[in-house]
Image (cartoon, rainbow, N blue to C red; front, side, top):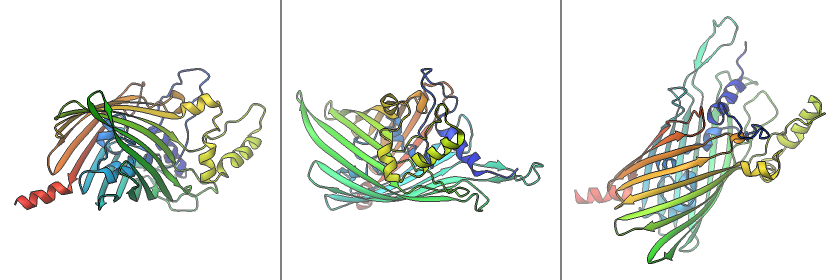
Length: 393
């Protein structure tokens, strides 16, 4: 039997978003928002991963490129680099992982440039091109992306950023007209507001952020004239940092997250298969990426209720002692009929002058969730700390 690229594509989607999903209500049919290169939606770093996947408005750090690049001008350090690693879906396989490299450099006091490299490996996949199995072979499908961003302070409290990204997905081994790697270009638009509030006798820091990411072209893997949507995403968040004393502080943050991708139409009662395919072609595949963004707010078959179910919610908290040690926890919630990603997260961090080490752990609450016991690790380097270290020597 000839190898079919869609087997891997569909399998990847099921692994990432929806194994053994059961809707909470009989009327809620499992109807997730589909997109290609779903690995782009995986949180890459341990700090945000330990706080329930929040990051749009938290304190800026070296991994803000993924969450909100507009935060970089507010960084204290002049420059930083981080390496992130996540062994993915260890409850199912032992060779899938995500690696993420990010860094930034502040230009003067009001702007910054930043970039990241993401590599997601699906491990080894066995394929066969005939029924006898004589041509069995092992392939190593993967997805990757590279991006750069520029951020600018418009005032002491407000900043904006723009990023451009190249996305590449290679899920096949046989480059023919039926199966080929796909690529796409995308852009991000982000903004960040940071101010101080007096609550009681404490000066608290308020952060508000928004990031619209992966606004870009569709992607095609060959074998069809229809192209797939990439995961354009809207993230809005708020964070409040409360100082307890000179050495202790606590932050609470929340994010709302929605894929700006249209929902695949469902077949209607009395509609023939041919009529349905024609309607799906017109109302889904023929849509431009920008039209798809606007349609994603009003096209759910279940109306307003289902549109609200497409929003994922994250809540997280962080305790920091003397800027050296951190404890974190959070919760992430997604409607059962949209993927059922429900999990608690915990984590910790340790910071020295030159580097910091963070880790995060996922505790799934939904039954048979493959994300259960997921680990994330982050190793970050402060370039100012390295420079000071050499000066002392």
